[in-house]
Every structure is written in structure tokens, then in C-alpha cells.
Image: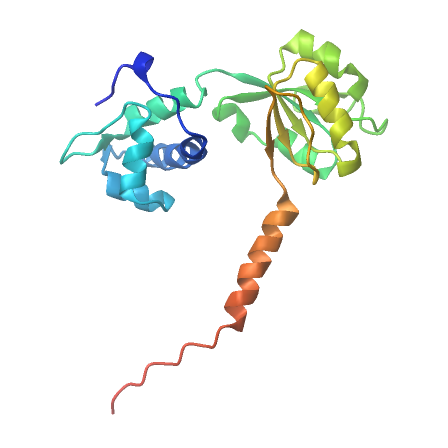
Length: 226
């Protein structure tokens, strides 16, 4: 059961961060032909408590049906709308090294509500190269391309030393949402949303946990009575 979307409350950032996980699970369930899912099952599949899941979904006005659960396709659509994925967001990638190439070549963006409309790099060896249907342009054309293509989201995949200047160019071009893969903290004016993805930091965190586990004493084997 869903409430009127016009009376929905502001969704907390922590809830927004979990919505893509719920959507990923719901999409898989829909592909498997599952019609309904309980809060316990959906919560377990994404690693949260069922009470947290119900609270998160209440921000969308979705409360499920007692004894039945949530209708998978309906809930997936509600989350898709809440995340703004019913639109086709134009994305630009700046920095066409190995990471930039991989991102530009990823076909999954199209099915998730995003389309790569522009690619930029300052290396003459990359400028003019085509990836899919998009030709790599020099970074000096960011502002012109933003006006021409309506770029909404900018992805920075440059070395750290170039990230701030690229960010400044995107902001000056009117881009208000930036995904930063460069290992640097960006300075942006109010009203600009920046998400940072630092792969090396994530690996270091995993290394910490791996080290702790390797230091634990081995669990003794069970003794089987003879």
C-alpha cells in the first residue's frame, strides 16, 4: 500500500544510500518471477534489520500489506521514482585513462537511467578516439558541451592533481552533481553534490579486516567421540 507521493517527507541521506540496495534485490526478484517479498526477506538480502527497512520504506509512503509483504514490481517502481531513475540522466566523464575507459564502456548505465553523452581528456592521444557512439573531446570544451548536451552529472576519473580544476570547470559549466574517483577532496560551492569513490581507501579497509582475521587463532576441529 502506498501513500500519496505529494505528501512524502524528506528522505534522510542514510535512507537514500540504502535505496539502491533494495532496488537491486527487487529487480532480481522481479526477474525471477517473485510477486511479493516480506520485509524480513528483503532486509536480510541487503544486510539490514527488518525494522530499519520498514522505516526506510515508510519515507516513500510504502507500508506493505500485513501477512503478504511488499509487491515487488510496485515497490521497485516507487524506489525508482524516488531515486529519479525514471529520467534518462546525461553524464559526462572527464579523464580517459584505464578507469575512464572502463566506465565509458560499461553498458549497464543505460539500463539504470543514465546515458554517457560526453567524454573529455587533455591527452592528444585520446582526443578524437571514439568509445561507443561518443567521441573524446578536449577538456576545454566542457562548458560548450554542457550547454549543448544538458550534462547533469559529471564523473571525474583524472589523477588527483587535475581533479580540482576539472571540478571547477564542471561547476562553471552548470553541472551540479559530481562523482569523484580521484583520490582527492574537492572544494565546491554550496548547492553542489559530490560523491567520492576512493578505491584505494576501500582496499585498505579490506586489508585491515583481512589482517585481523588472519591473526585470529584457528578454530579447533571438533572432536568426534569414538
